[in-house]
Every structure is written in C-alpha cells, then in structure tokens.
Image (cartoon, rainbow, N blue to C red; front, side, top):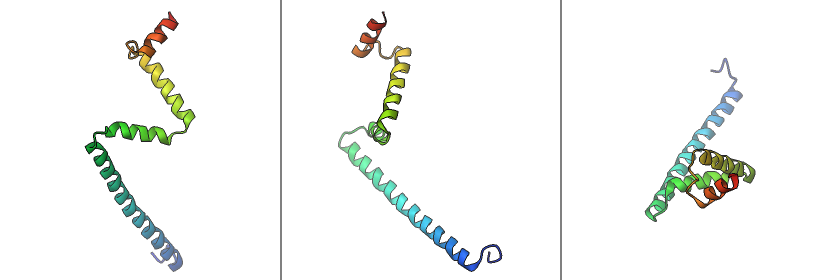
Length: 96
C-alpha cells in the first residue's frame, strides 16, 4: 500500500474510512429509531404505509407534488377510478 499511497495519504484514507464507518453506524441506529417510531404509531392506530407516503410528499417541493397529484388524477380518471366520486362526477358532467 505504501508504494501506491504515501504515508500521509494512507492516514488520510484511513481517516475517511473510519468516518464513513462511524456514519454508517449512526445511520443504522437512526434507521432503528425511525422503525421504532413507526411501530409506536402503528400501535396507536395509525396506518404507517400512509404515513410514509405523506412524509415522502412533504419532502417534495410544492410544484413537484402538485404535478404528481394532477397526473395521478388524470390517470385515475382515465381508468374510471374517479367516476363514482363527487369530483369524478363533476368532471364527467363538465366533459359532457
């Protein structure tokens, strides 16, 4: 290794590797903590799949979220999935 990487570079590399390993451990601990919070929420009667989706939506900027919601509505309408809802009925009457 010393032939390829000098002593200073080797120590620098080792430092990076150790930092990454510490951060990986922290990430693992955080993932465990997040899982425990979801378990608590589930025990309290919340739907954790929906919570995960809401969290993902909250991470998006408003324009991107609106674009996705509009596309979802277009696709659902094309599949007839909104026809029995007031919104779908209003859309169908507007088209007709």
